[in-house]
Image (cartoon, rainbow, N blue to C red):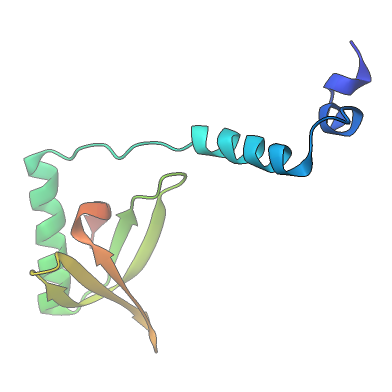
Length: 111
């Protein structure tokens, strides 16, 4: 096989591909790795809500797994606020370190 097809040879040996096309192609390949969010059943939603409420009431630390299109993120902290109108919770992780997390993005929660 030709060395052109190995590693970065395809881009380096092809003079007709301009940098903008290369960037667009690489972005397209990354977007193809994007994954969809799975639907949670009612029982899983109930378990997540119970863990959030328990963390809020007792100020216990909770571990949340939050959906991301490429890789799920695991966050640990204490729920300090629940905004039912915006369907978000405030996760406090330390001094001046908090984040608002949408309820529909939470995949799992455990105390």
